[in-house]
Length: 108
Figure 1 (cartoon, rainbow, N blue to C red):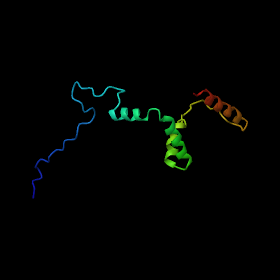
Figure 2: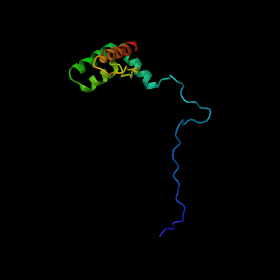
Figure 3: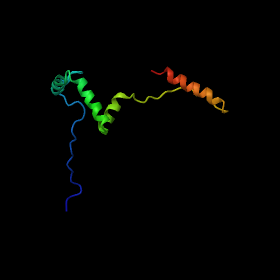
């Protein structure tokens, strides 16, 4: 039976964060990977045809392509904050709706 007081080996966790040595800042911000540069040069001038093909696939029923396109085309939801007037009577709904419309119209 092993001794309960014996030391257990400690596991060393890998270092997290920037894995660069001191003085090495890594790749400059905005620089691109070599594969990305090659891929973008191959696609140069083909953008219109590729987008047209993606729309054709979406119209033909490709759900993944439709989801991809709609995720890029439709604006993201944004929360709008505004002061809602108190509503004590049914007629106050008109003022509330006007307040909502003004808040939405002021957003860009």
